[in-house]
Length: 277
Ligand SMILES: C[S@@+](CC[C@H](N)C(=O)[O-])C[C@H]1O[C@@H](n2cnc3c(N)ncnc32)[C@H](O)[C@@H]1O
Image (tube, rainbow, N blue to C red; front, side, top):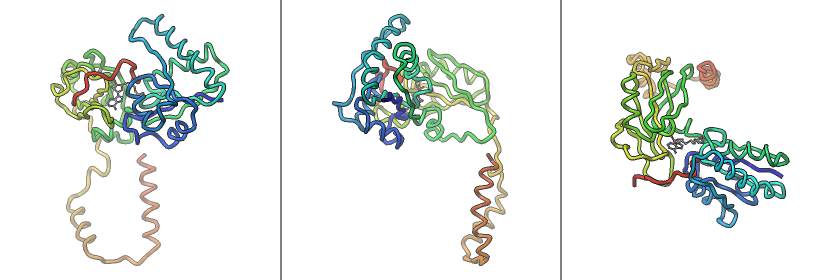
């Protein structure tokens, strides 16, 4: 049978994918690496099907290897005899604990079949939550900003693990970036904060990211440059019901829109504290 790595999305229980939900419904047992992922999983799975894993709060590599070996030893027989799932927040293949499990199973239990169900990652959810459009042709990089780091580089950056927003902010603004922060986006636990003021989020909360854009890097897509006179004429003609009767061109309008679009074109086991409510 199979072990499914299931991405739960950023935290709101209804942002689990349809496939993820189906796998969670069908799995005999569902393991979670942390409190937050567990709280999302229990919105879909009864407590009695949630499996327990023990992770130490340590950065000691030997201890971590021992913990993952023990976790794999618990999970492997359940995934051999039936279907098991291991959930992570976001996507299981983006900065996730699932990688540790996959490697440990490959080393000690290679007979276990693995399948991954992707999830809505903070890498994409941030854009909606922060009102950012990443337009075709723009470049965007994913980096970490733990302990006040302020990595710079491309015009647009997503920074995970913003644990000292004021320090990160200072570095990025000096390097010419405008920065917006998002905390606990689409999460049911804790307060969601979107701000460009680092002093509003100067308490440490692991579930904080930043979007940094180099000043002047804003793109000018075709639709940013409407002639406003044309636009007001169009609005007037929309108001007058001068029905065009050439059904053929109405039908081709949709095709043109589609063509135009085509051309334009840990879950941390230690997390969960420091929530602003
Ligand atoms: C270890 S990464 C896990 C990423 C996850 N696997 C994903 O695909 O979204 C954890 C970092 O992702 C960011 N993050 C994840 N979910 C978030 C959310 N709902 N709101 C804000 N930041 C989030 C935070 O910067 C946090 O420090």
